[in-house]
Image (cartoon, rainbow, N blue to C red):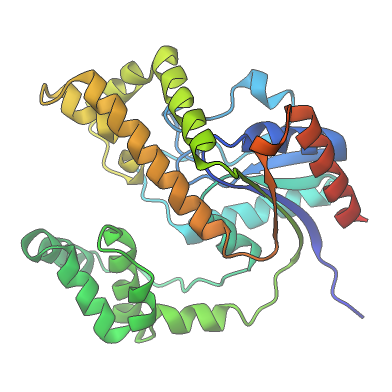
Length: 314
């Protein structure tokens, strides 16, 4: 007998592509609830910079895993998967459809592929040693060290991804097993989900970039600068300090750069992030992409997507 799998709909894609609206429409049509798949929306505060859905945008649909973690907490992908699995199971147990919505590729892939994480304790001395070395020798030196023990993982990372480089070295240091080997072993367990994955994309990249630019302008009008200033006045120390839209404003707060220049940098960094998101999701052949710039209005897109979801849910 084939093992029962929980039906799970996922809406993924780059920032500013309309995932929030589409996820809500799917949930309305199929009696669902939203599970956020965004590594920055999990933190309390930062409502504007992380584009958390407003109560109006939620349209009465329950949303989970938004604003529940302290901004000074270091929150890992394994933390996310543990809580997300429990949330998805709870939604399903109540007879409703879990709808995963967000653009954090690592969170999405780790959850839907049922990646198993090793629960080793973090060796803070070793982590601080690597961080200190990175400051003195550069992140490239730490990446080179990873390349010597785990060339496959190293080949997937850029020296800018220091956090993930250090994490891969920590795994090897604590377990004697490379991250590549861990990933291989973790995938031996089948996914508990019957996945219907929707991806949003644009045929014309400039169309997406213009949406991103408009979104940043709207964030500014909504109070982004005040939100970021208040956030940094609290001397944050966790993962949340990496949120795009906040860290780019620091030069303005210390008088080193104009607001206009910092805003342009937010737009540029957001466009770059969108490109990385698309690169990640396009690798997943299970995702059915819908191109938002091919639709005259949102209702036509929603109708097509809901038709696809209905067909897959059976």
